[in-house]
Amino acid sequence: MEQEECAGLGDAELVSLIGGAVDALTADRLRLRSDAEQLVLLLDGLRLAGRLHGWIARLAAQVEEDSVAWREHGTSASTWLMDAARLTRAEAARLIGSGQRLARFVEVGAAVGSGTVSPGQAEAITAVLEALPEDMPCALVDEAQEMMIGFAATHNATELRRLSGRLLELLAPEICEEREAARLEREHAMAMRARHLTFTDDHRGSVLIKGSLPVGQAEPLVAMVDAWAEAQRRGLEALDPAATPVSPAMRRADGLIAMVDALARTQLSPKHGGDRPRVVVTLTWEDLRRAAGMATDGGPLPGQVAACGVRPLRGRLVGSGVPIDAGTLRRWLCDCEVLPVVLGGRSEVLDQGRAKRLVTDEQRVALAVRDGGCVFPGCPAAPQACHAHHIVPWWAGGPTDLSNLVLVCPHHHATVEPSHDPDADRWQVRLPEHGPAEVIPPRRVDPTGRPRRHARFLTPLRT
Image (cartoon, rainbow, N blue to C red; front, side):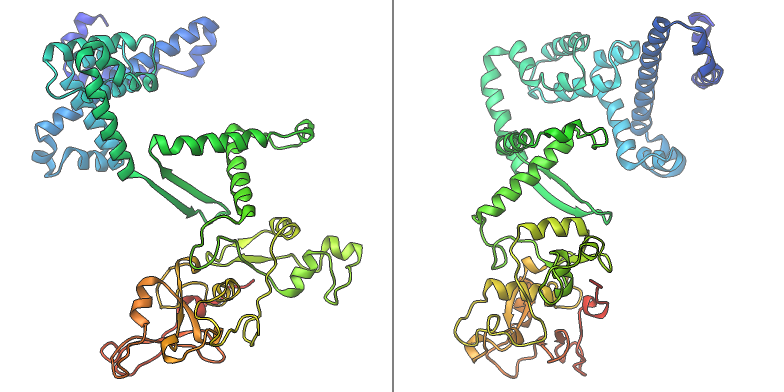
C-alpha cells in the first residue's frame, strides 16, 4: 500500500496491517536473496523494529499520562502491562520511561521514528541530555539534541553515554570545568553510597559474586586482577586439543583466585572473628590419611587402593556446610595447614583453663567445627561472624575451655551474656556433656524453661 493509502487508516488497522505483513514474512524467502541483499534486509528490519519500538514506547507513555489503564481497569499502566503483556515490573517501567523521554526530547523522538537512531542509542542520548544542568537554555538543549543525533551515525549506545562531559564542553565551555567537577563529586558520592559486595551460594557448586565500587577504588583491583590473569596464561597445556578453552572472563576469574591464594600465603590478612581468614574442611582421620596416600596405621596404601579408594573422599566446608569435591580436597592437602580437632574429648592443646581469657586460633577452629555458627535457634550467622562466648563468665571464674565456650553472633551475645544479678530473667546457654548447645528461654517467654536447640543440630549433616 502507498503511504497516502496508509494515512487514511486508523491506528488499529495499521497495526493489523503490520501484523499481516510480518505473518507473510518467512525464512524461506531468504533462500532467494544474495548475501548482500540479506545484509541489507537485516539492517532494514532492525530499523523498522526500532521505529515500531519507539512508537510503542510513546504510546505506553501516553497511556500512563492519560490514566487510560486506571479508567479502564483501576490500575497503573505499568501494572496493567505486567498483567496483560506479561512484562516484568522493570520492563514495563523501562518502556514507559523510554516513551516519556522521547516525548520530552522531541528531536530524538523524531530520529527514532525515522529510523535514524536506534532505541538503544536513544536511551543513551536521552540519559546524556537529562544529565545537562537544569538551568541550561532551551536553545542549547535543542542544539545538544542535534549534536547527539549526529554522533549516533558513528557511535553506539555505550560510546554515546561517554559523551556526557564532552557535550557540555562543546556547548558551554565557560561553565564546563566547574560543572564537570561538581558532577564528578556527585557521582563519586553516589558511588560510595552504592558500594556493595555480596557472595551468594547458587547451590550448584558455585558462589555468585556481585558488587559495585567507585571508579577510583575499583581501578587498582581491576589492574591487579588483570595482571594476575595475564600471569595465568597457559603454557604447554594450550596445545592439548582436549583442553577446555579459556575465555578472558575465565582467565580473570583464575587471576582473582591466584591473587587471593597469594595473599593467604603471606598470612598478612587482618583477623576476622578472632582468627585470620582460613578455609576449614571437616574430614575423618581415616579419610585424611587415605587422601594423602597413607593407611590408617601410618604406612603407605597399596597402589590400587591409593588410586581408587574404598569409597569416594568427601569433606564439607565449615560455616556454609557446602560439600567439597575430592579433587579440590587433594589439591589443598598438598599445601595446607592441617589442624587436628578432637571433639567430645578433653585436649590439653584446646583447653586452657584460667591461663588465658581469649580463645586461641585452634579453639576457634574447634568451635566452628562443633557449633557451625551461632547456637541461638534460628540464627544464620556463620562461625566467622560469631564471638566465642563464656557460658560461665570469665569474671565469675569460668575457664576458657571448650566445655565452657559456644559461638554466638554479636546480637545474641548480648542476649545470653549472664548478668551480675543471679535472679535476672534472661536467656541462658548450657552445654550438655554429651550433646550440642541448648538455649533456655526466660520465664516470660516459656514458664517451663524448655531447652531449645538450633535446627542444624536437629538435622546433622553427613560428612
